[in-house]
Image 1 (cartoon, rainbow, N blue to C red):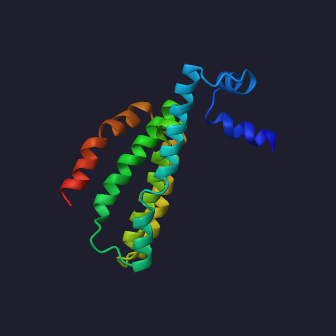
Image 2: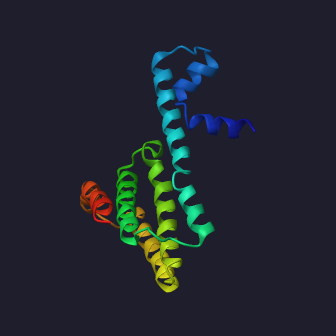
Image 3: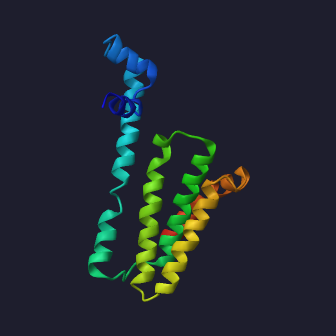
Length: 167
């Protein structure tokens, strides 16, 4: 149990801050307080983002209908969030700074799948799920050059704006 707790705490505290807080019992170290609060907020945002689209997913599932939801709009949003996550992953940035994108990717992909499913396009829904899974694997496995990931990241704002404005 001690290792589990230590691993959990290490997600929020650096080793030096862990020592500062739990070995030296110096709970007022300004740098450690700043780091800890920043990491805790990042972790909280990630955990909160896991719930952002859940109500929409539940509403679509319960109603067995996606009327009024544009597949193209959802797809453009999915492209943007996938681009952001794959770029940040490839750059090696800490998960706490981009992890919310992973949850948004997953939830947005589920919404896209449900939109197709409840539009009586089961074959397209399954093809979409397979294709998106493959694309995600390719992006995160390091097969795509950084220059392409950077270009995808730069295109995020226009992609999201097109998805929201035109539909």
